[in-house]
Image 1 (spheres, helix red, strand yellow):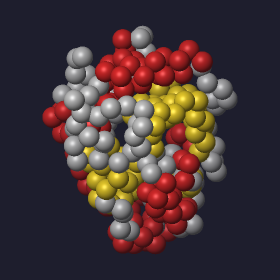
Image 2 (cartoon, one colour):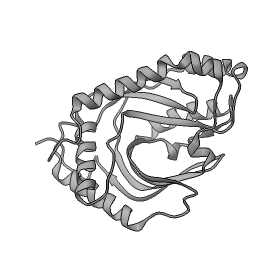
Image 3 (cartoon, helix red, strand yellow):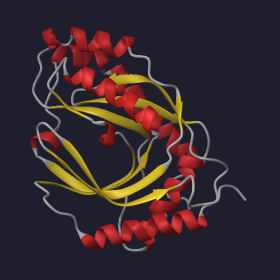
Image 4 (cartoon, helix red, strand yellow):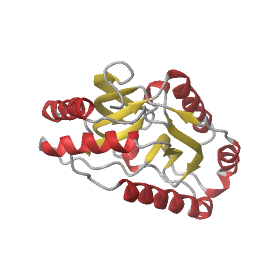
Length: 238
């Protein structure tokens, strides 16, 4: 199985994106927030995602709820919390999925889980929250090779099956998307909350979901069409 991107380049790219976001914090505070385009366009698309154990999803969802009470932002419910592996064919006004795309995604994940041998369950360390002009993100980094290996296998098989899937840019979880323009003078409480938030440090995803999503000003909805319980349906290691 070919590497879509080397693990070194993947980690370097993710680190660069995190650094750019953190370096731009003063600019965001000076200019204010904008509406996330996926919210304003009511975007939808297909996806493959990792799901976390319930307790961890609750923790991130509670951060999301608190933030949505400080500024106008889409709240990510417990069922919305995830870690994206693939987001595909995003488009405004999506009302129903492409059945062919969903079948390819399901086949690719099935092949990846059957063929890819990883050393352990993916272990993700979350080190804090940050916000940019459009969203709030839980900053994650992989503590072992498993996320990279599984993502590489899934993207590889998608492409093998004719779907031009993109490799994920990083290991992060978006927990809010801003729904209204917010001026700089209204950001102090948000900034203070982000700085004081203690994010749970480690978690291992326990499911892979396939489905499609839609956005509106007030809601983010994930419609799951196939779920893989990776703790019980596959063997890990050699």
